[in-house]
Length: 240
Image (cartoon, rainbow, N blue to C red):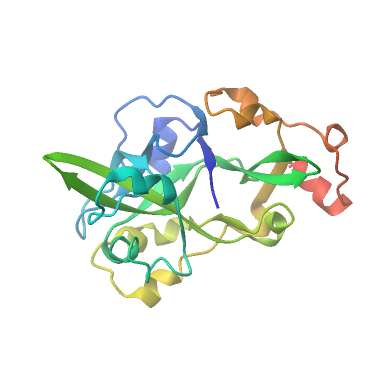
């Protein structure tokens, strides 16, 4: 799953990376959590320019009786999203990109959970594959989204079995195209980023508090400060 992530890049960097136009100044976000508003890129029709917008993280299907279901739909398994009632219509026609500079996962160490920060070794922003929907009731409109997940790459599997789907830049247009309804064509994009480009390191439990929103969430702690030892080939990931 993906329960927290970060987006600390400048608007100009994201505008260039994702070929869009972000006019507002972005505040660096170090600890983005479900139910919050997050930046999303989407297109509503073929040939339309990518639209940056803010959606609530936690998908509420258009047919839902109330919006509380969104708390349970922050992630969607990419292997089954195209068949699940909550996601299949969005998977077919309402796909989006969720920009991120990294994400957090937790693994159990004894009686506590150790958080890790995962990013590209290059420290570049990347586009997580997402789905969005519109829910309306009593004249109120709510636009929401979910993060697609897939099996973790080998660098990540030691810490967690799942990780976000990362769409490759050359596939952005195809992924966002709402006229592309061929499931097989869409499924080819549902992969993690390559193992060799993955950097993972432990961080303090400061990030556990959703109200903590600063650089301390990403400060690396070293294996000696944890209660677990790590093979040498994994320690190398912490120094990239």
